[in-house]
Length: 271
Ligand code: NAI
Image 1: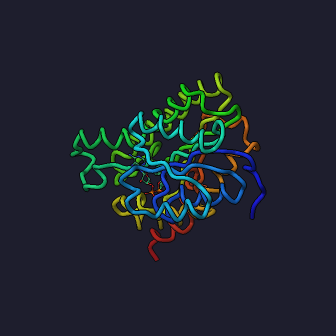
Image 2 (image 1 turned 90 degrees about the vertical axis):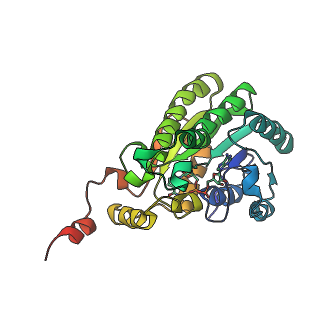
């Protein structure tokens, strides 16, 4: 269903890798709601070529950018404003990667150069994107910037590894930059804390299948899907949420406030 919530709005969407990506679903929904945007991803991710399908479907252009490289981000933002014909109304940061997770390195045995790489990609890149947007005065007033996060920033999930720390850092950047973006440019900055979702990044976490079915059984409304996340993001990009800022917003079917559920109790009750 479409409500034309983003009619006339222009943006940049980071992180659509394939049709499972949360950013992919978000691009589809933003398009349905009348928004126009530039798609971007790391040059290496372009090699898969999948993103071309999404670009065609949504009438979008693609500009490759490594989100850890400030020159790439500057080029992306300058070119996006040219293509879209003006300043930006919305940005989705949907980027995450930990080398330690990828290589199966335990949290008590991290390699620190891998940690730094993952931290740069998953957390500092959000600061870099916002700093370039801010300095270039590239955002329209009442614009909206969203990044995606996970509850391991607040509570321990052992296999989430150093991504937990990256997400805590990311959420803090949203608050810190949100203050200045709000005061100086009337732009809001939020993070959405999403349920486990079967995507390339999600499935890279050890024990993901157990993780996702446990969350499903713990959440009164069940796990939020990638489409649910896309819809929530659309609402945050729309004019209906103009003074929501500096928040970490849970889109998790109630998981984060549930101590235990009946389904989980039943599995641990001896007959
Ligand atoms: P995904 O694997 O489809 O997306 C991750 C994206 O990050 C990919 O498109 C990848 O190319 C991009 N990326 C990696 N390094 C990059 C770089 N240097 N520059 C630019 N882009 C780069 O997976 P998903 O799940 O859609 O991930 C999107 C966001 O959602 C991430 O921040 C992730 O941590 C977050 N999230 C995912 C959950 C899940 O269970 N899948 C749960 C909660 C949050």
